[in-house]
Length: 79
Image 1 (tube, rainbow, N blue to C red):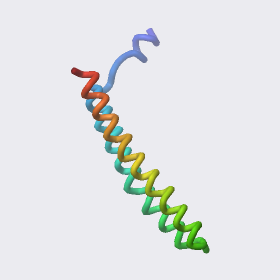
Image 2 (image 1 turned 180 degrees about the horizontal axis):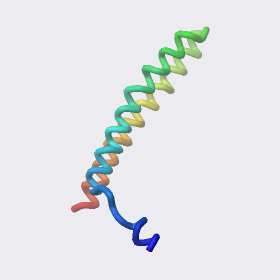
Image 3 (image 1 turned 180 degrees about the vertical axis):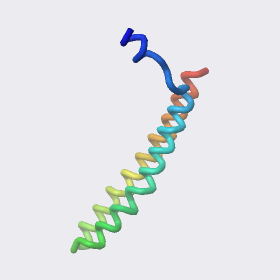
């Protein structure tokens, strides 16, 4: 009985992929904003700031790519 209840689907794969894409893109937008606000509070040298900016932007790009991959994988599995 519990197994049947837990195996029920509450949303389609496409809806779950779209939600994952939305969350990934929201993170890709929020991470740089929050990080740059934090950088302004810190006293960083130029090299430290450059490293932090590169790491932050690469994380944001990674989130955006992950959101796109979610949708592409769900489309290929549906076909």
